[in-house]
Amino acid sequence: MWPDLAGVEGLPDALWLAGRETLLALPLRIAIVGTRSPSPYGEAQARRFADAFARSGALVVSGLARGVDAAAHRAVLDAGGATAAVLGSSVDRPWPMDALTERMGREGLLLSEFAPGTSPRRHHFPLRNRLISGLVQAVVVIEAAYRSGSLITARWAADQGRRVYALPGRVDHPMARGCHRILREGAELVEDPEEVLAELGAAPSATGPATNAAFGSEPEDPVMGALTGETLLAEEVAERAGVALSEALARLAELELDGRVQRAPGALYRLAVRGG
View (tube, rainbow, N blue to C red):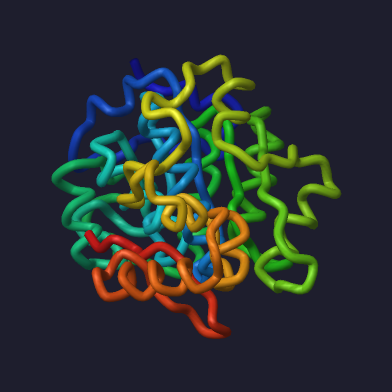
């Protein structure tokens, strides 16, 4: 079943595909987009939402750019799910060309309206955004600057009759301003991937709470649980985990040595990003 591209302006005469073409037959398709320079919070949320969507059986669509896009694609692949990238170049000249792109060609799907041999060009990227939104039923914006390509995708989606969701962020963070802007313009505020799945009539993600499996946390470890999808001070970790600060610090040190927790600037802690 080819996705319904109704409403896509300037629908291309042909689309070129590389990888698992059958992924386009999946009935539930959700886009995750955002900044190339996410905060640790934004990167964690991209992984959390992507993992939950993948485990619900959805095709997760994005643009393969560094940052939020890459985090979403990688989380889906790590979960054994389905993901497709719409390129700003031809499928035989994907950009960026890195380990994730090679993995997408094997385990996911690369898609482009640009004929073979076409190099990436600046104006191709905002143009491809209309296909990202056109392929899906909903677009989720994780983090975005006030002027961002992700907002172009959100506006294409609104014009095409797709649902648009945005995550709220800190009022003093520049990568929250784009999300807050489209929330004022009518996007739906979302805090949990299960909200999106429920509104689209999809089954909940198969593993329950979104991403213990994706981040390698264990339910019995309260410190890992406190950091799932979060970037926190040690005092906040202790409070959320219900343990003494000294115990939290000791456990954080162990997890950091194991490579499962990273210390960020400002004495903040987050779950380690798994490579791919």
